[in-house]
Image 1 (cartoon, rainbow, N blue to C red):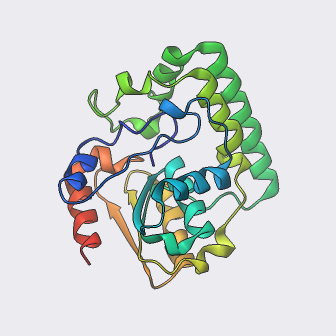
Image 2: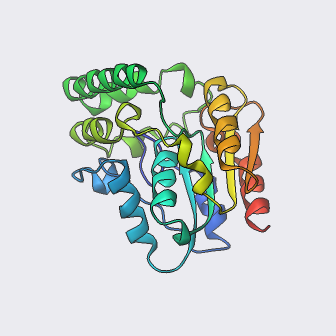
Image 3: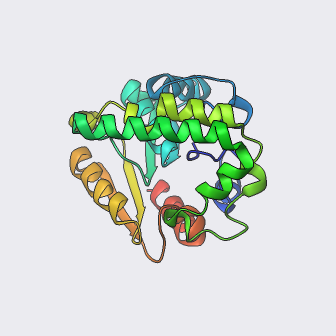
Length: 234
């Protein structure tokens, strides 16, 4: 599952490398790509992922917003997920006041997306410091432009961090092997990643990818591919 304002076509070489050895299903999250008209909160999005998985247990990889969806899917039906990879993810904002402030910011951003339109918004979004490590190729601008302003605004309103129920006290329910990946140039998510691993416990592994920011799988793809494939092989 991809991050906010991406879609299923924004994984770079990781998806292709994984698909050379196993079946891979890349999903469009609610409000994105072919699911631009789908409205769903994080729990509902997690259920949609489980519906796509079906009866065969799967390894699930989620990045940023996709990591939060993956976490909700894993807590909804843990037996459906035999391995879990969370890239630059979080289990939510604890403090109610901070969470409400984030919800207000998410709403303001949703309104700005609607006002600007998709092209102008993407120019602003990809200029943020957290995406400084992306190249013209890994920005996936053409693929992102297949999203809609209305869909992205809906995704923020229903699945933004400001609306996310904090799940830190439930992480101990996750017993499947879990790999948490962050970039060393993204200190906020490095701290969140450490906390995820602390909460999940002995079944988890924490890796900080050097010389990468919020998108380590795109900024250092070979390192992350080697990491995930080696870990998935046990």
